Image 1 (spheres, one colour):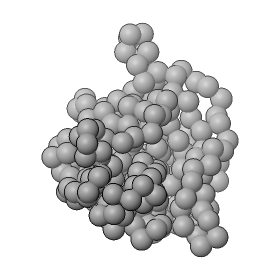
Image 2 (tube, rainbow, N blue to C red):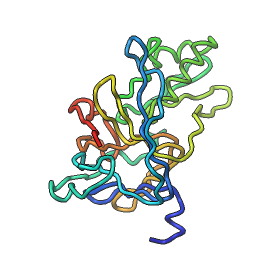
Image 3 (cartoon, one colour):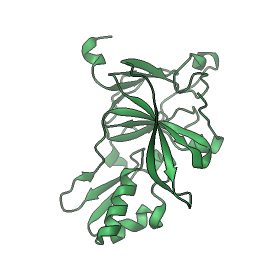
Image 4 (cartoon, one colour):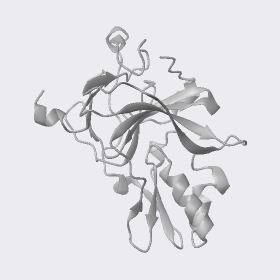
Length: 232
């Protein structure tokens, strides 16, 4: 592979195979932390994998070396056909405008992180963003959505409100639902399709690693429905 290409943080989807990662992307488990009510309220950093310039991550859900690929996709004839929309986020999004902040939402990208739920849900909070405390809760909950389904916008500037992430990949674990979640691409990692298509670069997106999403390559929450577990 060309050294110039490999120096850029990139995840390439291989045809019916794994995600090929280049660019020295840090890889670590990220755990959904909950409060006493079981609501998703924070991210907890967990095990960090040893640094590697290049590696491959399981996409079929059946590797015995999760989160890494062990070639099982070939044995089970995994069908990893990409079915998700390739339109830019804003062309797919629905807009809800509040008094101080607004919300855009692409429901098909939902990865079932549930950070949107506390305090009456972000869809209600957006209408109360003229109150400082509510505005802060709305921004925090929206920014914690791993898939980037939800984006908060500052009405005064017209700019999105985002956490500043270093380019990296999180391997999501969801102990409250006793399942393992998707791969969390953070900080503007380029995703390339099996046919060479370059997906829109975004600050947050989640990729299916259970093999069951109907919106590949993106997570659609199927991991929770099937009880997918990463015991690697």
